[in-house]
Length: 380
Image (cartoon, rainbow, N blue to C red; front, side, top):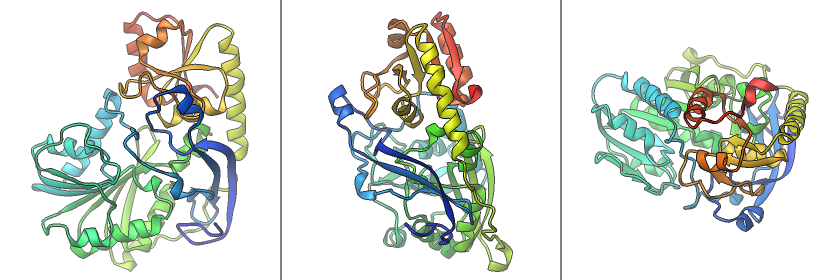
C-alpha cells in the first residue's frame, strides 16, 4: 500500500513488523495441534505522519474468516458490563423512543443493553459473523450481512439513531465503510455513535500487545475526526474505558461548520518504546518463571499477542467459559478457568488489561491465592 487509507497521503513510518502472527485472535481453538497449525500472516504496522491513522500495510482481507469459531465476548466481566451500560446510557440520553441501527452488532449485546432500558422501540443490527449464541430482546432483528448502500435503502423509515461499536478497526478500507454510514445519516439527519480503540493510548503506553492482525485500522482522535469530516460529519471525540477506547458522537454538518484537516500531527516513529517494553517483559517473565508457573489473565487479543511474543507463559486465565479448555492460536498456550490455573501451581499472574485489576484481585482473594499479581501497563 502506497498511501494512507484515510487521508490518502504517502508520508508514513513503519512502527513495527512481525511475521507469522495468527490471522485471528478471538477464536475458539479446541486442540493443541490445531492451535500450532493455525493460519498465520504478516503484520506491518504503519503510521501516517499526516493524519495520525495507523494500519497494517500487509493486511489481506481474504485471510480473515469470522466463522462459527470466532468468539470475542467479554460479557462475563462485570467491569466490561458496567462500561457497556455506561455507553448505552449515552445513546439513551437522546429524547423519546429509539429505533436503532447498529453496524457491526456482534451477538447483539449492546442492543440488548439498550432494550433493557425499556426505551428501545426496535433495533436492526448488521453483522456477517453473528451466530445467535444467546437470546435477544423480541424487538431486535439481526441481519447476517455487511451494511452497505443497498442495505440502507431497505431499512424502515423510523430509524432515528445509528451505532457502530468495535467494528471499524476490522475494516481495511475505512473510507467506503464510513461513506456508506455517512450517506445514510446525512440523508435522514441522524446522530451517529462510534466506539473504537484509540491508537494514541496504545502508542503512549508502548502497548505491544495491542497490535494484532484483526485490528487492521487504528484511529487517533484526529484521524477519526478527519475521516468523518471528509464525508460531512462533525464529531466530538472523548476517551473512555481508561483511555483505551474513544467514544465518538457525530452528526451531519455543513462544510463550513466542520473545519477538520489533517495537519501533519501524525504518529511519527514509535518503535523504540515498544521494543523496550517487549524486552522488559521478556526478562520479567523469565525471572517470574524461576519461582513457579506464570499465567496471564486474559485469553483474548492482548493475551494471544503476549503469549506469542514472550516465552514462559504456562497458561492463560479467562472468564469466558467458551474459551476454557481451549488453546491460544499459534502459541498453543492453554486457556483455563481461574480455579484450574491455580490448581497448576501458578505463582505469578500478569493482568493483560489494567481496567480489570480490581475485579481480578477480588476474585483471587476470594480463592485464597497468595501469589504475585502484576498488571501489564503498570510495570514496564
